[in-house]
Image 1 (cartoon, rainbow, N blue to C red):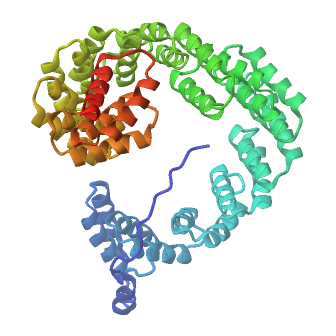
Image 2 (cartoon, one colour; image 1 turned 30 degrees about the vertical axis):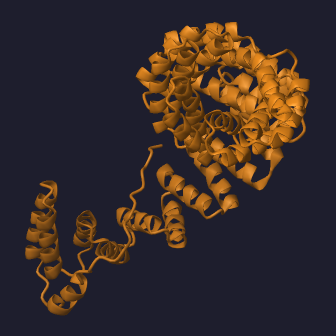
Image 3 (cartoon, one colour; image 1 turned 180 degrees about the vertical axis):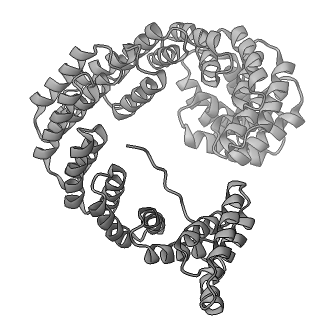
Length: 537
């Protein structure tokens, strides 16, 4: 049975030629077969040369000398269609089919116009007549069946399928069309019967066992469904999709442990493509993200991926994430290095490698790897952050400031920018550049007005300079309101009050700070002595 691609018609609306009406009015009394034959022959020659305009002129002339010439109408219809004159093409084939209703090809072309225009009632009526005349033509039967399916006349479609099968024998396409109908009708008995027929015809095709298993499963016949899946494994132990089907089956039946075993088997199946494995892994992890077993399952999946696909980074990424979550930074670092050895451009691997090294206090590695990551991601603020912070820890303040100043320009997130500016404020203070330090603190508080660390530091540095003490007190008060038992913040409050001359209030906060201190601190002691000295005077 040949496969036919239907032509898609454009919306009708082209200017019509009105040729047939002219022919009838001007030449109805002057037929000339000789001239008709000459122009018809010339039209065919133009057609074979793909000269559409020439063909149209000749066939129109042929019709002028014989207005009832169905053959010229048929040819002219085709040329109008090629030229894009769709309405004229349709009208011309209608006239040809009416003039010669016994001509099969005229009728079939008219039928295709009906179908392309979605005039299915006309199409079905025409094809029912044609299949009655030509009952042994399987192509016409197939066309009619398709029309019945489109118009949801399923009983008629089934009857014609039986007739078609008598002509061409048992056919997989016909059977699958029946399956679609039975499934639509909810006719489980017929659906199972038809699938069994398919399996009988194709005993080595696992797809049909899988389809039957799904029907059994949907109808509460779990044992029968499982029997089908076991049959698939018997026929083809390495079938790439049977484990996915089993995963779905066990999930529906509520057996999560066996479902996970099927997932692992799917990952280890070398015949299943890696992309599909990654998708079902993501599906499982997302669905079971709140399960107490999810971390252990991620570990097993990561090991299965890395053992089955050691040349791909996915297993190492999963294992790295597992060890990040379970706070084993050393092993996380190992697996992210393996991932980067396969794909040196992987963003997640760079980021989590640096996080792992940061947790291990490997500041030189953090700095070096952050700088290397910037070669691949020069606009990612996270790598500037780690390069800056690690440089600061290594007492490379100039480099730290340079990285942080660049990084803040690439962020649009207010809190992230506030973090950059807060760190810069501290670094500029260490460098003795109070103007830039205070500017950075001001920027921080514009984006994050409740940043207690900056509120405290900024207030303290202002107090030390004896500058903007009212503003310093306001910021310090805000900090201790947020964290009333933080001795550092209490000390700042006391020192701001001291600088303002409010020694009694300063003493109250200083006493509380000393009481909360776990170990003695020289700065706190000096502050307290200075306050007591003022109180004595």
